[in-house]
Length: 125
Image 1 (cartoon, rainbow, N blue to C red):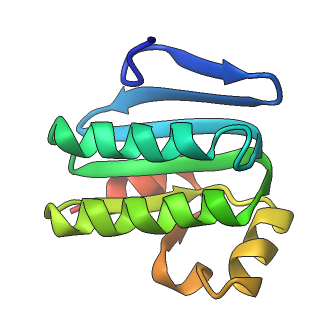
Image 2: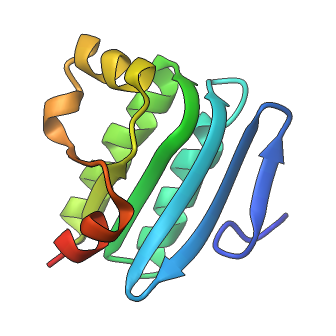
């Protein structure tokens, strides 16, 4: 299996890759993130990053067209895991549809949401 911290995972209409910007790990995702495509990869990636002591994680959703409830659940679970280990997880570049989905599910307010990558990276303490 491809190491989630090295390279890209592609599943038909979903891609995920991880890159480092200084001490911040940026998780770039694109496509539709659903139970059948991507949500488990997202959760596994976040847990793997925490197990490898990544404390600053920025999840870039700028190219994500849709999240289902399982994907939102993985983001919330990932946030909890990261925070419990003394880290920070922030979201970047929400599309209108993704922002609306997070608002409808009352998940939006628990995340630190950023619109600009450079500012988001600087915002980590």
